[in-house]
Every structure is written in structure tokens, then in C-alpha cells.
Image (tube, rainbow, N blue to C red; front, side, top):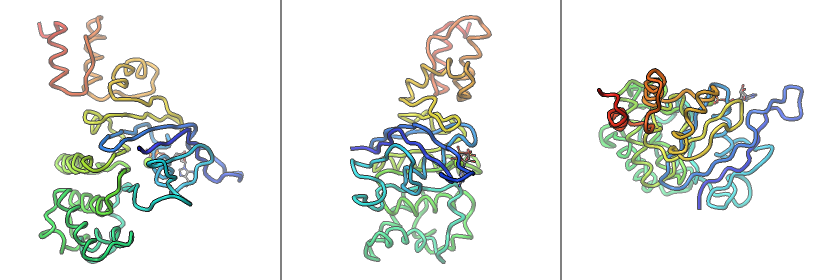
Length: 280
Ligand SMILES: Nc1ncnc2c1ncn2[C@@H]1O[C@H](COP(=O)(O)OP(=O)(O)OP(=O)(O)O)[C@@H](O)[C@H]1O
Ligand SMILES: [Mg+2]
């Protein structure tokens, strides 16, 4: 039981003169509680992948299944996959935060009292006290609060798989930490797929990674495998390593010898450098 995208190919304006292929032969697997980071340069197909996985864009090839069921059409189940668009706070429409968050569960057919309870639970899960923020106007929230409230609106539907498109873009450091904490909470109930331009942000706590380039996958695997393949991927210009990894690689390059291992975590990196004799 998992979310499985298999050999996915997506085209825009297929069959017209403007036809363009945005994704080709991309596969990934996401289990419950896992975090998968999707990264790649602008235009590499990250948003297209999320839209295809959420069933908003029909692929021209390949398939997406969620717990063995298709994501759209006959046999699909609504609300299993939740997609948080880029800048989701731009889509608030209800007069209060609570009503906005309750809309999704109501739309899935839940009774009003249940939907309100789901909305309040979701607000608490993103670190917003439902008693304080629930009655507020969504447009009066700060940027970081608004982002979290919008995230709560999707979490309130209790999706088993949560997809997010650059959820920390444009936030300051406390805002980014709050979103990261909310996603750590969400993983208790859901598998999380997060698109990010900044691999530093999530890679340390991720289980898997997918790196896209021009619509194709140049890496797909565990974060441990990514660490092992990082020097080669960097050399081939296919990935910009996270800062800690880059520092380790540059230190080794400058000294003309290898470091014992690579790590995403700064404390672990310091240990590796000390053990490799770089502290003398
Ligand atoms: N609606 C559309 N019609 C035509 N082409 C599109 C459409 N949406 C995206 N594309 C094209 O598909 C390719 C992949 O776009 P996509 O938005 O998936 O990239 P991305 O990796 O999310 O980029 P970014 O990091 O800038 O958000 C790009 O070349 C883009 O121009
Ligand atoms: Mg995008």
C-alpha cells in the first residue's frame, strides 16, 4: 500500500502545434509516514509531477495509483491525496479561518460538526491555536500564519498522501521552521511529498529524494543513496549539493584527499571532519 507513480509522461497541449513534453518516464514511490523531496531547476517538471499525482493532469503515459486505486476516474477515492499549491494563501475565500479550513472536509461529505472538528485539529497541528485563529479573517494573518492556515485547510481533509509545492517559499526563518514542524506532525498520519528549490530545507529529515532535470529523473532513491551519488551528480552538473555536503566535498577537494563519509547534518559533518583529521 503506497502512492506509486510509474513511468509517468506528461504533455501540455498534446496534439497541437504548441505541444510540449513536461515529464518523461518519471517514477516514484511514497509510503505512509515517509517524506520524499522533489528538487530540480526551474521548468524541470516538479509542479507538473504534483498535478499528475493529484489527478489534476492526465498523463500521456504511465500511471499513478494510490493504495492500488487510480487517482482519478472510476475506482478513485476523493480526498486520499491532498495538494497544497504554491502560495496557497492566495486562495482563501471564507470569512473566517475556521470556515475556510472546514470547507474541504465539508466538500468531502462530512457533517458540519465533524468538519469543524477536523478544521480545529488541523489548525492545532500547524501550531495555530484554533480558539485564537479560527475566528480571525484569513486576510488579516501574517505571511507565515497564512501559509500555515492554508496548509491546515488541506490537512483538515486528512489526506493519506500530502503533496506540497514549495511550501516554505517566501517565508522568513521562523515561518520556515513552523512549516517544517507542521509537516513533521503531518507525517504521523500521512506520506509527504514536498517540492523544494532548496534541498537544505527538508533533505535532512527526508527518506527519499527525486531529482528532475528537463522533465526526466536524474536521481530517484533513498537520501542515503543520494549522499553516495552526490559527488558524481555534482560533477556532472546535475545537482547543487546542500550546503553541508558541499562544504565537506570542497574541504576534501582543497586538501586533495577524500572525507570518510558525507552527511546532511552539520553536527555529523563536524564529526566526519574531525575523524578524517581535518581538525588538526
Ligand atoms: N499549462 C502549461 N502549458 C504549457 N506548458 C506548460 C504548462 N505548465 C507548465 N508548462 C511547461 O512545462 C515545463 C515544466 O513546468 P513545471 O511548472 O512543471 O516546472 P517546475 O519544475 O515546477 O518549475 P518551477 O521551479 O519554476 O516552479 C516547463 O517548460 C513549463 O513551461
Ligand atoms: Mg513549479
